[in-house]
Amino acid sequence: MKFKNTWIILAISVILIFTGCCNNFQPKNIKHVVIIGVDGMSVAGVAESNTPNFDEFMKTGAWSMHARNVIPTVSSPNWEAMLTGSDVAQTGVTSNNWRFNNFSLPPVVTTENGRYPDIFYAIKNSNPAFTTAAVYHWSGFGNLFDHDFVDFDYDCTDENATTRKVTDVIKNDNPNFLFIQLDHVDHAGHTFGHMTPKYFDAIELADKLAGDIVAASKEAGTYENTMFLVVADHGGKGFGHGDETVAGNEVPFILFGSGIKKGYEIPAAVNLVDVAATAAFALHVERPQVWLGRPVECAFEGAPEPKNLVGSFMAPSTFIPKIFPQKKNGEIDGLFVDENAKVTMETAGKEGKIRFTTDGSIPTAKSQIYSSPLELMQTTVVKAVYFGNDGSQSAYSEGYFRVVKDVGKTMGVNYKIFRGNNWAKLPDFNTLKPVGKGKSLEISTDQLGDQVNDYTGVVFEGFIHLPKEGSYTFSTISDDGSKLYIDGNLVVDNDGDHGTQEREGSVSLTDGKHKIRVEYFNGGGGYFLNVFFRGTEITKQIISPDYLTIN
Image (cartoon, rainbow, N blue to C red; front, side, top):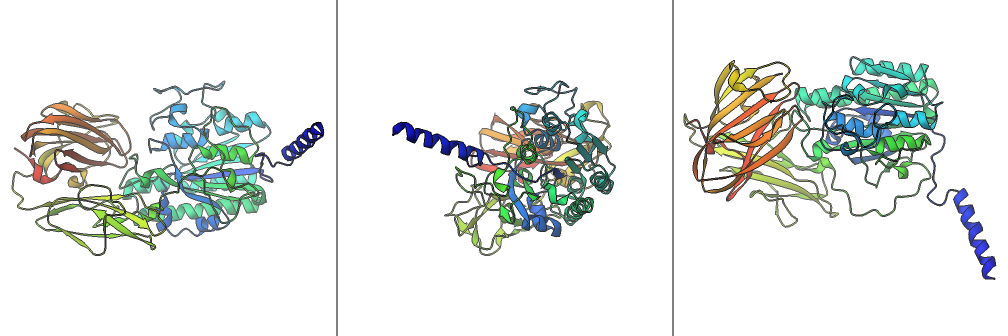
């Protein structure tokens, strides 16, 4: 009897295996995969823009507005993550300066061509009959994949030319896999600022172009067997990106078309390394062992819900409280001279409350509820969090308000402007002749107006007055490079051609006056500089003019 039962159990197991009931799910009827990648398109940007096509894609597909990218939040590492299903530590693509024959960190493994295995390589090795295509606007995207495994390869001049070429490729060449890169939204973020009307216009154009691409698939007769994915490499803040913020690190992820569930909000965590894995899964392509990415299986029709879900996502990034007044690019307009700061807050969240603090701490469920505008009569750090009635909460926002009274002739620092060519790091300013100079209340590009453009260097010099002896931590947030010196000693090294990033350093100082010097350069595109400090009884804040003098 025992022997008989064993055979029954074995038979049932075999049946389960061959009927796909043991985690053996495979998508069906997908012959084409089209990835529409939009450089610099944030979750909040999509939410604030008029995007009828994206809205329809979500209504008829599956989506996550919590997809995370990889660090650093710049283009090359994140496009590479999508192409290879792997993070920076595996690919070695650490910055936009990476080149196939010029890098610091070698990839973990290489193919016969000496490159890390990407999605094009995986497809061709799994099914040589499949055809592949790449059509892109940013030429830098072409550095990131192995062209030997791409059948149709086009580097285009702008977003419209890119889309025209895409529609031609879909109609005439009918590839099984097509990766599209549109660059104009990122350009708008750098030129006009993220979360500005021009930035929203660029997202709305991306929405239209995505609609044109889908329409081409319908005209070609391939739509019914095509899975589409709309995704972005990063978002941004102000005129740049690269910093570690929700605005920069959370991106849209929208799957729709053949084999995808309808109106389905993906409950699982999604990352950019999952893009290649999901495409390979849809086409029944074997994934290289070295890839880290996982297919977003639960988004496919017939697939079970994910298991072992732990915790809950934070409230949508659009619920993060906005603190006003703001500049046109969405940055806090925080310097008030000879007047008090009048501060207001708002959130897109309707089923909850904003709680805030004014001591630099992160708000909790016990912090003060925002109900009316605040009037600040002195320099204050305001932080705010949205708390939903369902127990969710947002990331925090912060505003550094500097309220300055009795501005004298010596308050602030002096600055000098320099021009260069092809800078990739800070030059030796002692060997250069300044083309302009002036006095600034703060150490910030905000104080320089339109004096900063491509290959501009700035040196700020003055003195900082410290109220007490102790350890002080200074930091610069810059796009591109910066260095900070106290009493001639390097304290912060944030040099290099990079997106917006923060670096800090600490030093023990006596009370009283100390010389401060900050060197900065913009190599091209977006630019940004702010300088912070914290210390004994001083919460982290932008260095207010109250602490700065020219002598």
